[in-house]
Length: 471
Image (tube, rainbow, N blue to C red; front, side):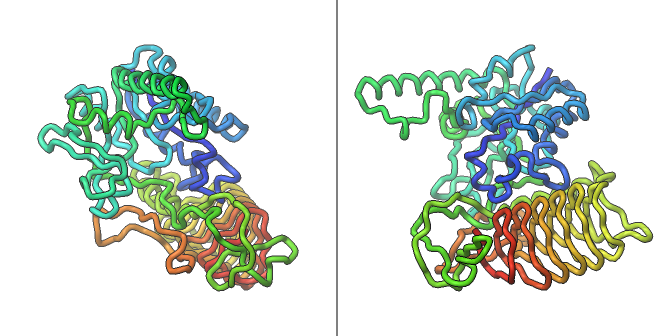
């Protein structure tokens, strides 16, 4: 008997995925036509002996999440439950807090998957490796180049036995080119080290209280456990943690084309739309400083979602060919891998692909060109519009002859170990180009250019923008 746990996080972590996470929890964001975590659930459901899938996080169990769980249970004929944390408990705290639910029924082992990764999920291969050599922790690892490895948890392994000898989360200097994929297989005994961390946290907190040094703002709480720092780093080299290396597809779905934007001494752009109807405000390199910003929400452009969509669409050729659109007489021209929801209306003269995902109820007009983009449900792309390297939000409208374009931030194709880069928002005082994001219910007028920009929800633009953040 096996179980799986998917760690979905919560709204506080979703700041790295804004403005898209304003409208839907990040785990339900559509990647290659289906919610992000559906790819995880599909992989878990294909493992023989899988009895239950548990989702752990601190999202409120709202209608979209509840509806998704009900639909998934029916589709995969598996119990799928959501366990809500009372507070953010870290990557290991939820596992310990819900240990009784995880161990109920006596599973042989249980998978743990982070929701914000894209992978082909070699779970059966991991299970075979675990059964050949049983240990409390088995980590899925892959490789990255020397520079990019610093952005991940780095693993030093014994090349003969694959034991993890040393583990450092996001080191400051090069440690290893083997990185942690955020996909694990744990034995029931793996929960014992989590218990030790919990008890140690309790003792530390009691000591702080006794010394009068307790501060709620600085103390994360005894229940907060970081798998990577508190468990993997501590147990490496003790014969308990092993790594299974994969050369399959893998990417994070949180590396940003734009890094966090927040209160850091920035300014509203002056002139023009700053005081126009609709309240458009800009942050861009072409406008001189005006007056200080008040604290604003963090948000980034999730270019990694486009890259993950490309990887999954490529996988569909082998796993779900029925999801890929085919070129048919009288239908739109399909180039490469394209997903079109059955309810979408696409004009026959449109040209789609490669790597395009079109959601529920989308309307695509005559002569439209779509490439390397995600169009979310209810959006309208009017006649002769061009959308490249962009995400069009729910219910948004792009007018006739408009052009919405971003700049891809893909891994270096000449480096087989390259991963997505996390670029800074600014360089030399200028906004760096990345993919274009239209939040939900944005209206783009006819015959304008929106290039390398982020438009927050419910904005109605009146002209072109380049390298701007429309607040």
